[in-house]
Length: 278
Image (cartoon, rainbow, N blue to C red):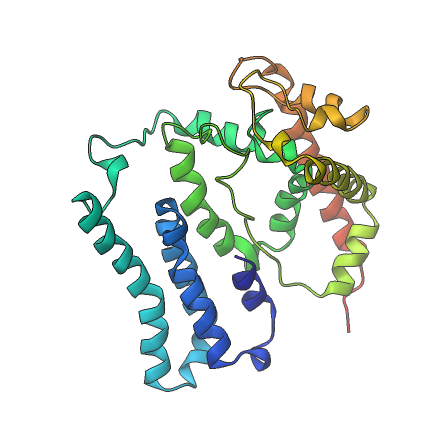
C-alpha cells in the first residue's frame, strides 16, 4: 500500500521498469496474505495501470505483458492452490454458505470506523482528517477512495466484521494519498490547530500501544484498554465512541461526525487563503 501511494506521488522521471514491475508483483501477491485482499488487489492494479498509462505507452510490449502477468498470475496461483487444498477456489469459508449480508453492511461499516474497541478512530483518531484531505483533493483522490471501498465494503458486510479475537481495525487499510504541493499542504495544516492536536493525541496512543501491544486485543466488554492509559483525553474520547458490542454510546456518535464536518470546513476555508505556489 505504501508503494502504491509512493508511485502515485512521484514524478514519472523517478520510475523505472524494475521499480514498477516490483511494485505490481507486490500488489499481485496481496491476496496471499489474506483472501479478503483479492478485490482490493484488482482495484490497485487497475489504478496503477490507469495512472501510468502515459508512462507505459512509451515502453515496449514486453513490459506491458510483464506487468499484467505480475498482477494476474499470483492471484490465479492462489485460487489454484486453494482448489487443490480445499476442493474449492474460494476456500473453506465459502464452502457452506455466503458469509456476507447486505443487512449487516451498515452495522459493520459503522463498527469498522467508530466502534470503541474495534474501530479505526478509536486507535487512530488522526483519520478524522481524511474526509478533509479527500474533499480538498477530490479530483486526485476519488479513485483512491473507490479502491479502498473494495476492501471496506466487503468487510463491513462480512458476518464477523469485528474479526474475532484479533487486533482492532485489522480490516482497514489507509484509504488514500494526495498529490499536492507540500508547501501548500504545510500552510493549510499550520492554520488548523485541530490537526496538531490530533497528531499529539495520536502520538500518545501509539506510545501506549507500542509499550504494550496486547492492548490492541479487545476483551469484548465495550472498553478500550489502550485509551484508558492516555490521561484525561483517552477515556473522554472512548466515552464519545459507541460500542456495538454492548450497545451503549449511540447518542454521542454524532460527536465524531461533527468533528469531521468542522475540520473539513476549517481546512476548506484555509485553502482559500493560501497563495498558490509558483
